[in-house]
Length: 135
Image (cartoon, rainbow, N blue to C red; front, side, top):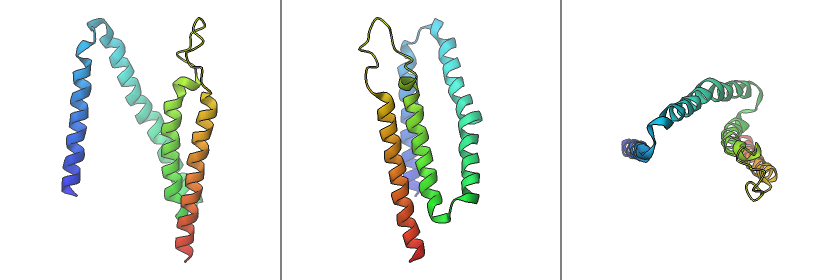
């Protein structure tokens, strides 16, 4: 376990160093907006997403049967990440009226298919776990 922790820690440090290295070309005039963007991500995560996930987890612990809790929580975390990744394209934030080739895919349908796959995986895992508990 210690080796795994050290490996994950080293990978995290390497990722942080790579991120710092990639910032070397940022102009001084862009730093305020960059810092606001990074701070916004922290605020969004710590004050919106994390409490929401914890609240859903607490509610689920009271309502959802034991065998279904872990698959449901994993499914919510995966679906939440999928949805956060889809927000820019679902909102068409990069679309330009003079270039119809930007954002020309069926993003809503793709997000719905991804959501369905996550839901099916949760149901499958929940059924397997429920069957193990019953046996």
